[in-house]
Image (cartoon, rainbow, N blue to C red; front, side):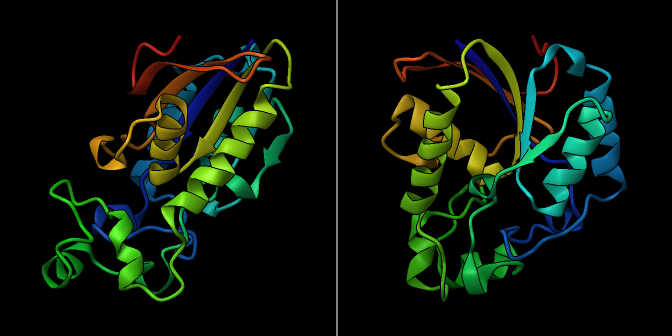
Length: 202
């Protein structure tokens, strides 16, 4: 059985400015994002984890480095990068929502319709595929406790892959440094324990 703890990175300037924060927008953590990661570092006990995986993007990798405290080698995995929003990467949400209301929902989250307007945007189905592949690899680790640092939509994609929820619009954005816990077994079964907690991480 693998216990998988999936963490969203700390805050960036583009998060604060309500911009679309994809894989092209490789922003560092801001001061608040660093403080968020430091706070979670004091809540979790990294010495009880067997491995840590991270998206190679700066905001995720810095979050992972703070949480890791030099304890493990950080496994950088490109399957964990945020969605590539193409020409929409880095743009402000509000103007995009006014121009293309079907592409931004009432929670200010980008819907799968955005690919109708953004050049070279990655489909959500492709994100689900790479997260499914990552989860499949996790089932082969044996009895391990694993920390995964990734991104907002990617964490929502984990939820969709595990629960098979029909529409990701029903999965809200996790908080920065929100932790979701999943349990996998060698048969490839996944179970959600909790989603986007910032306290009571067990």
